[in-house]
Length: 244
Image (cartoon, rainbow, N blue to C red):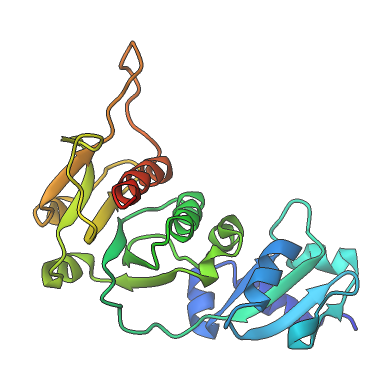
């Protein structure tokens, strides 16, 4: 079965957020990522592959297409055998989780994807994002999560309002905060991570109750800052280590 022009037009349009929102669909590529998504509760719209591809336990098989056709709908430099189109799940009310990561204007898809994987690794079930944080269904985000997208609940909210209404203490990464290795960290909290270039926005900074910093150990002390995803990993490790 060949791809129709309408199929190609629809799939390539999903590279843009406005069309993902319009059709409530997103794209995932590669055997690892697609298999993870197929094994989750996400609803599959269509599946394409260049060779036989089947998830036996769900009785799902792919529409076989040529490598040339796959290249037409892929965003990868080297298309990876299989591409799936999935329905974006409806957002539900935020849970009253005991520990939440919140993102304030994180723009880079790779950073968001890595943070989603970190949440999955450290057992953080809920990730709250400001409205100006990159879309979690951006294909670069989907690819970099390596399936963790299915195990972390992601909600986009008015972040200042969300933080004001929460009863949890609000922690944030800040260059002038308390040394995280010496801080007394609670089991229940919200950890806010800011924009790659500008950090926490002034509006959010006014709400934060505790600032944390990761000290530099280099002799020259000239490194300006850590990548936001790297910093998130270190801070999550410290919060979780306190529970051991």
